[in-house]
Length: 58
Image 1 (cartoon, rainbow, N blue to C red):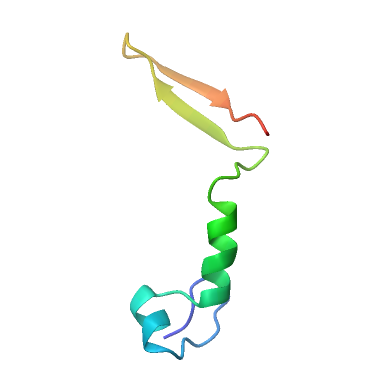
Image 2 (image 1 turned 180 degrees about the vertical axis):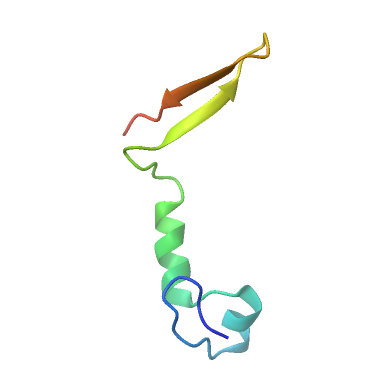
């Protein structure tokens, strides 16, 4: 089984059970709260209309 991020073989039982290697897991953990500069988010207003907004960079 290979890591889906970097395609390297997963060797430890822990990595195989998680389905991702430890290095890639740490990198993804750092990125999870950072929005891409071109990313949009959709919110549903109380009136049921969808609103697209550009996510602002912190």
